[in-house]
Length: 136
Image 1 (cartoon, one colour):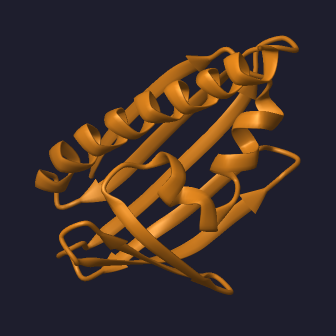
Image 2: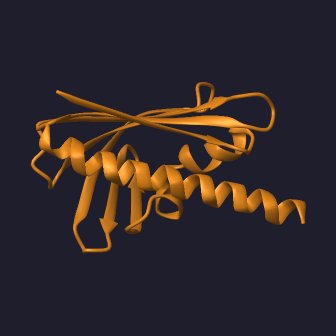
């Protein structure tokens, strides 16, 4: 199993980051190249800009831990997948967002790693520009 992990410090309280990351329907606001999302119970369907749907099963959504986990179930050729996003407070005004993925086949790790890196960079920009707007 391939394992990847990306992290980013964001100059916003953990609660602000969790409000986006912990909401399964909000993924299109911070994860680039996604055009729509439908959440039905534990099932989440995301449509990419290319029109390809990603089928996922929500595994964990814990506000007390600020942890969100999901499994990619199709249509990509995935034998096993677990994505985990943790939002960890670093004082009152900053947080660390950690996005880990375990996946088989290994080749998907390279694709997912790039996408996750881009998503975290976008999340940081989005949240920190929000802060600038609120302050001014």
